Length: 238
Image (cartoon, rainbow, N blue to C red):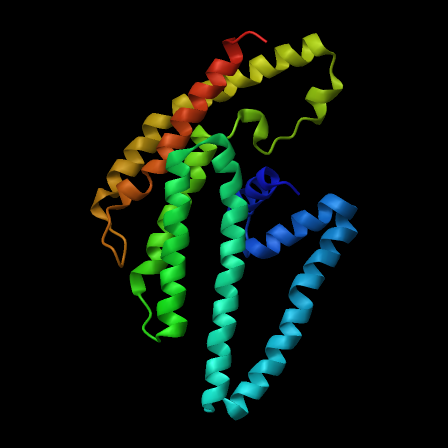
């Protein structure tokens, strides 16, 4: 799986119901062996860690007050930070190749926020309430920004079995017709969407007290940019 495919799949898994990493494992396994691969990836992800967690919980229940064990758990937290760094670098690679400065800044801010939160919680024992909220908002903004301004339309998840089966001329006409329809639908939905987002100025986030209309403005940006890109695809020469 390339870095672009990883980012695309990871973003899709955020919109699917259920834990993101579980969704990612099922999609990853399905790409190699279909349904059996998805089941095997899910079992491999959930099964062994669950057994290990049960055994460690039993050990911790008996020996949790020992200082050496606490220091060991702090070391495990550091290992988790290392895994987080690896994932962030994998996600940053396509943004570097596309020279997207805004996306890089937002994703780097997510990484720094999560790193500070992990360090304060597990190394110093003083968790910060606002870190989770900040990292979530920044991550959502980075995903919608990348979807609106970085990824090409053909890089998004699509269902194109019918399109690929048609002759080139018919496929081109179908693509243009679909682009026009999608652009019109998005533009038609934009005023109602903006009215709803504007209405959210009364509400604020629990920790940082940010206005929710500012938080969810990224969705309107994504819809407007997607509509313009679909309209451009409908009229541009090939």
